[in-house]
Image (tube, rainbow, N blue to C red; front, side, top):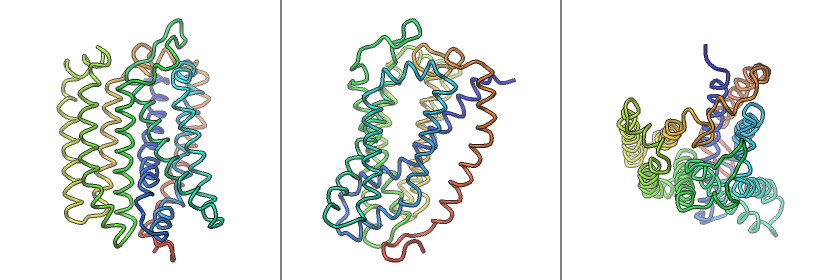
Length: 333
């Protein structure tokens, strides 16, 4: 029988992964927003994600709320360690959400909301990457509490991962716009996606080389049996996704590059999971140690078994309803 704590770790990991791949491309659209050359293109870019962007962030709430409910010790340690990047990320998402609602209300302030949309998108992506890097490099724990300094989250490695996430999300945004738009905007996004793809792979390569040296346990997991198998399988799968991305862009495909870019993120997420397991807060707090009592895990699981399928159903339905190309004058067709 599986430990309830590991079932919950899987649920939260799934929620975070879905958030990253769904909200990643709409943050990427925001990062690409200044490249729009006309108001029509700006409207097209925003309309491509307008029906789905707030639903994507449901998964962020599920991941964060689930962590508090079922891994309260991990939450109590991670939050003080990452207060600044998390707060900045949330503020950026708020500004970005307000920009969605207000840029259509009048011409006078439209340029302000356009800047808020871009700024909120890039800051949110950068802070997510910094938080990831800070978590990978390890959080100091003493006596079941965070024992590090206020600025431990800021390091050369976390800045690297911050830039990597910004570039990766921009790639997702370009591939999404290649999928959802037509004409000059689509062609330009397809052209942008090629160098963004190379840059994303470069960041993945550098981060992958540095990660095993952040903690000795990472090194053991990747370069000792049986983990050494993943050192072959994961890079091979990354190469397959990279080939699909670039050949799809070359051949004028629309769905294939987007799915390949998502595949890169899924594989990176798997790599992080391999590095972390069985810890939930590296380098020393395990999933079992951080979990709430079994009675709490069972109680929360009952609701989650009902809630998660419902969220998946309405998310899939929203994407189905708004499938196809988007036009600022006619909407989806």
